[in-house]
Length: 148
Length: 148
Image 1 (cartoon, rainbow over the protein chains, first blue to last red):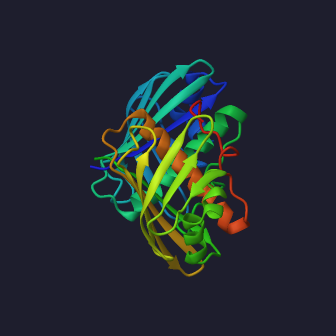
Image 2: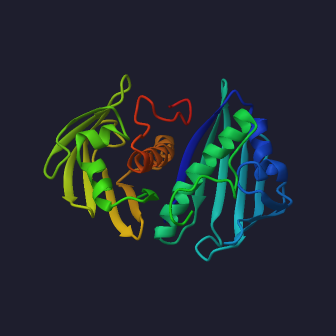
């Protein structure tokens, strides 16, 4: 089963800052989408919307401070439902290293190719948010193609 | 076996321009690395270098104008040797859509996570080169982490 994998480093940051960007509404709204609601803390459920095209509902499977966050997709595009999104953080000197996995895709469809590139772009937005205070969440996200 | 997948769209471009950026030394040097030598045309062999860390030698397995390019890695980091890099191009109105696959990785090692994100970043460089005339090849590439 194919996975989307990424690795990125956030410079001059503590893992707790990256963890906050993954587990608070303000944090998530600062790099993924302005339209984030719900409870992204341990045991919570969070809704991400990208008007006008829809969005994703996630259950928080794990949230271990400064170390690990995992979500399960419970609503959204059919290809996403039941997949998991997994974030592992570790500190290496002045860098916080993020290992990202979006697992459980059933087929390597064209939409999966798109989501892989788009995740890479949003990870750069997360990096910018923590490093500079300003990310590029939807609707101000970087357009990568006709699929946005 | 895990693959790296990406999809990107180049706006206001003809597939022949993207094809040229994948099959000429000038094109490749404009988005991937300044230090590109060899023959990236059909049946050729091309050397990509990223001083001071090394690089990749590729054999061109296929080069079908405006439609498809495929390379096999014959020298470089052990994880890359024997893998293939596959580019499918198609025209959709004002967009050239690129489907990218880097296949044949034996294990989803941390380096593969890094290469996935880095490929996404270099695809944005390719898009910028064709759209604006200016990409961000090494050594002026976007730094994504401590691994560059």
